[in-house]
Length: 423
Image (tube, rainbow, N blue to C red; front, side, top):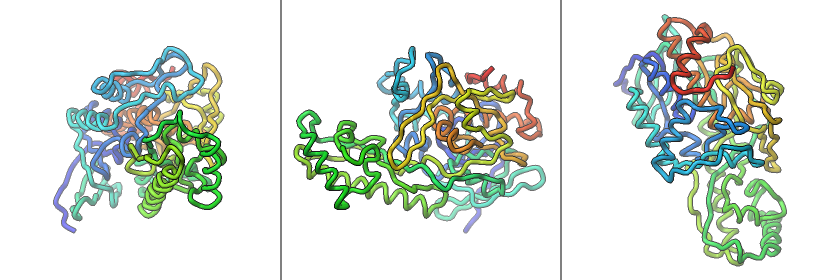
């Protein structure tokens, strides 16, 4: 292995999903020399490769509660596509009606353009292989394509990997649950007319397919007896991969293989149904999406009670708004928040307990399992990413730890870049 590159930064962000993009952009726009390490060749994570191209929720009870860099990227993406936004004026019974459907290809391009414009050093096709904190700096070894290695240094690191990879490598405590939510392969089927199908016949064939093993539980997670809802939705967010895990390469490989196997089972089954003989896969995510693996053990852990009560903190850095949303073997029944309730996230939930110069953002922030089921969504990931980027930039400039950053300074920099801070 040949070491060919070196780099000195103020902030290194690991993971280029919705949290990592906003973390890197905020740090760079605040004047920090910033690198963003992403193991694939495209930004966006779940929004792009994962196929969940409907970020939310940015609004609560008829009022916008999350803005800032993430919202800026969404607005620019929508403007370059069809220009269609949901109606945010009220509170729909179905929360997903206020998610913003965006073009994932445009989102990836816009995110990359903004990172380059801000001076972020994009390091695609690299992963962190080793890191240590020596003489007031992080020393990071990465490995990239063809075995090319790099040695980087930084004052602050932000883990936006979705699996707390860097936090765990650094030796800080993390938490996980024995029971985890299933993963999902996002998929869209077409080639049939829902209005011509025999519902009773199709539902009967579905039950037979589950019984004889042509389909398995999870292929359509919302029902074990009726398949018409799946056809009506043309697939979508309904294919569950039980036990899906992305915390190691082997486990993620297994999740991806099982996701694509489910796609083939469904396609072959649907083509046996009267009226669905010409069914085809219209689109499919590149990877099986993962809902939960590890969460950091932070300076503060957001509890379910904190979340559903809308507790505010002295060090709140952003709002979050989404129902409690735990998927299981029977699908999901979201539990909405009480009217007027808008939860918030404290900076301490982004800082691993006992750490000095490392932060976390995205779905890995310190929270119990129920709270995390709502905090893990994209708008909140964007907001926590921006907050982590601001804290890291201030810490690197001031030669202090993120926990020592003055709340007033953090608020100022976030609001300057469009964020909404709880009061």
